[in-house]
Every structure is written in C-alpha cells, then in structure tokens.
Length: 90
Image 1 (cartoon, helix red, strand yellow):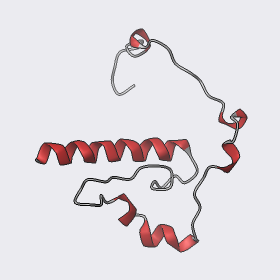
Image 2 (cartoon, one colour):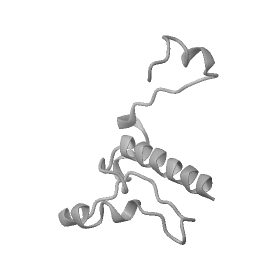
Image 3 (cartoon, rainbow, N blue to C red):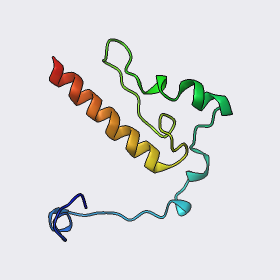
Image 4 (spheres, helix red, strand yellow):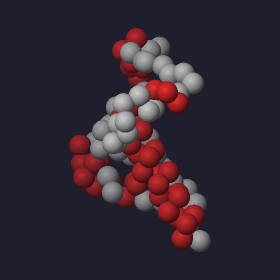
C-alpha cells in the first residue's frame, strides 16, 4: 500500500473489521440522489468551504461516487486536507 513494505500496516494495527455492506442493517436507504443536472450544476460548488473557511462538507453526496462508501471516504480525505491547508495558511 502506497509503497510500504509488505506487512507494515498489519504489524501496527490493533484490530480491524471487514464489512460486507449488503448485510448491514439499514444500508439500503442511506444515499443522496439529486436530479440528473444537479451533478453538473453543483458538483464543484458543494466542495467549497463556507462561513469564511470554517465549515467544510464531506460525504457521499459531495463526491462523484454517490451512494458509495468510497465516495464518503474520498470526500472526507479531501475535506480533511483542505482543513489542514487552511490551518497552515494562518
């Protein structure tokens, strides 16, 4: 993973969980769906910070991977990086 030697991460983990999302309770009703044109109109704008760079949004509804946990995780990483950049600029 990311150029690390085999076993590097596994040797440092205390525990982990493998999740089969299709069996998770309530999993079938937790996605955000807009109109087809919403992605074109708002996909960039929803990623921008609000309230003088004090509020950042993340989640599957912000990403290009709507309804997927990958989208939620990806947008969370991007938002966290933007928060870190904003702090570093102060």
